[in-house]
Image (cartoon, rainbow, N blue to C red; front, side, top):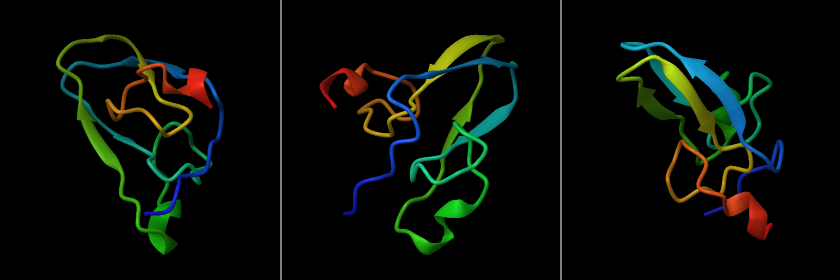
Length: 79
C-alpha cells in the first residue's frame, strides 16, 4: 500500500456536532483538510467516516499515519 501525503505534522482541531457524520481524508490530497473532497479518486485510499456522538472539540489526524483513524494518536511525533 502506498503512503498517504502529509498535509501537516499536527492534528486539526475541529468542533464536531452531535449526530453529524464527518468523512476524514485518509490520502492527504484533499484541499479541505482534514476532510475528504474526493481527491482520493486516483488512489487506493478511501475516506473514514466518523459519527459524532456528542458536540465537542476533537483532534483529527493531520499526518495521516495515526493508528486510531480518524483521530490523532501522536504518530506525527515520530515522523
